Image 1 (tube, one colour):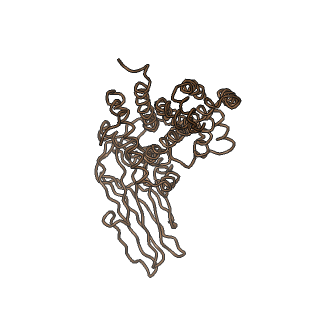
Image 2 (image 1 turned 135 degrees about the vertical axis):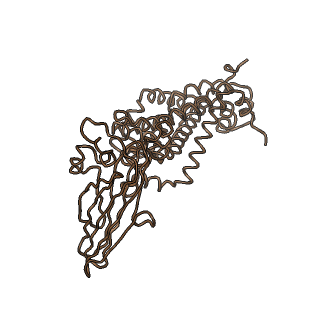
Image 3 (image 1 turned 60 degrees about the vertical axis):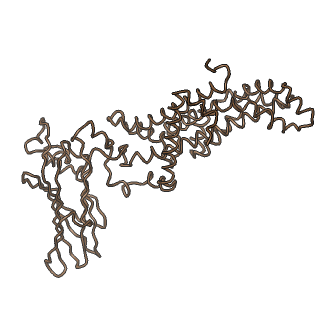
Amino acid sequence: MKIPPVLQELTHYRSALLGLLIIGGLLAIALYTVITIPYDEAIQRWRAGEEMWGDYPRNAVPEWFRLFAGNSLPTTLILDSQTPGQVRKESQVVTDEMRTADMTFAFDYTSDGFPNEINLFLTAKFQQKKPQATMIWKTPDGRRIPLGDTTVGVAERFAISTDQRLSLKLDGRAPEVGLFAQAGTTAKGETPVVQKGKYELIIEGLTFESASDLNAKLVVYGQAHGLAGTDHRRRDIMVALLWGTPIALAFGFLAAVGSTMTTFTIAAIGSWFGGWLDAVIQRLTEINSVLPTLPILILVGTFYTRSIWVILGIVIALGIFSLGIKTYRSMFLQVKEMPYIEAAHAYGAGNLRIVFRYMMPKIAPVLIPSFVTLIPSYVFLEASLSVLGLGDPLLPTWGKVLNDAYTNGALYNGYYYWVLEPAFLLMLTGLGFAVVGFALDRIFNPRLREL
């Protein structure tokens, strides 16, 4: 298979090879994302709440942070009584209707750091009388810390980490710290030290109906999760980073194609026909040049809709009569006077045939570099709207991640990964298309060719 001449010339520029590698990687990620995570599923997952992300830690750093932090970043531990072999469950008959439902959650804790949070999810099966449950925490050194008791409905969450009464029992420490700290290091002024070893959560359950049952799931949330970490709603940020890639590329490509091709076509038609048509096009271009694009999009997003496809249409409409028309017009006026155009007109070629078959192909190579460099500008425009809170609320995009990070004080709270990951992808996209566009400009523009 013969390599196109343009690609052969691009290989002479190392920066262009880097740009092609970046663009190829982004396209591969976009294709992988669309295949593995369908559009509807991505929206459902990103907008879901605790029912989907309940087992994920809140504001957890990426897993690869553990390469630098060592053993101080624990991972999430999940023990479910309905999963065979994870929990020891015992039941004894007390009376004809009353039965015990005891469960023991045993696990080894080996990390140097404390968990992020602890939650206990209780589920019960009953007709009228709700089961009762008493929770006891047992440490490796034999201490038994009562967590409390509760009446269990169909589905209950016992938030151990937010239990203020338990915190008072632990000398004011947060429960996720006090329950895992060595004895004597939980007092105020003391630096808590993790006690490693075997822990047990004992649930003493009691049911009051013969067909009643009680189950529980213990989640000890870690401080690290996944390749991209999690946000304030426990969502895996990787979903937004992956789906942000095809959305950003599609928005940038469609906006660049729509605005560039219409501008190019209008400039060619105006240059050929001249007269009042060319004058009208120039006046519209001058009027459009003073219209502020970003404020207009902000007004649309505030008062009308935040749909990314409506925003895309408005971006294309505002880009039709851009100042590029004047640049292309100057080129077409030179092409219009060339001998082969006069010859085509002499043998009877129609006006539109001359415009589309002879004039536009002559200038088309100059269009390619500007088209490539326009793509990242539209990608940044979409991200800017999302950062301002005017992005599509349904779609997980890079700008939406940045907006969530800003709204929830990610930098103030030290969640740097939440900001740096989408920002890095935005800069990488801009770099890839920019260096390829500059190389193409050197190839197609004779004045920039290297001697």
